[in-house]
Length: 189
Image 1 (cartoon, rainbow, N blue to C red):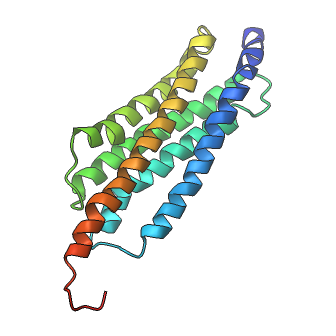
Image 2: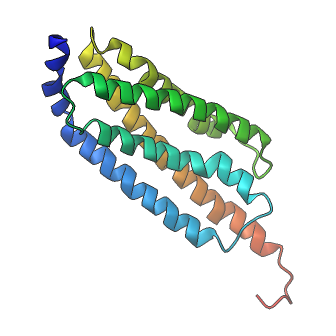
């Protein structure tokens, strides 16, 4: 147990990293709400399915990065508490990735391409698996475990950025022109 206590100074060295990742994730969560509010006036018949499959996971990944950043700033006496938290987050993320897979298959709003499967299923699943298994390496390979957690947090942040951009660009550049072109010229719009 004394060896685990010595890991805390190494974890403290990650403070700046997690401040940046957590701040970015928190700000981007807020931005997602702003975007959703702005596009809410143009709902589609299958918007709920599309949002569940493509929008909600983006906020979940940003939230996971924010949670990791907050948890790893908490004043734990040993790294064990933090490892338990990030391991539980990893397990939750794996389960959520499976749910997203089911939602993507069921939705009819959009026909996913490989990039969508990569950024909505494969990469998040890998990040959450890494979080789920890395607590088992803390006792013997603490530095590697901490880099795994940091890499997972950064990957989730970048996945969220990619997916947020992809969602907004689809809604603005692809969906909006289709919905405006279907209006009748004499409908008063």
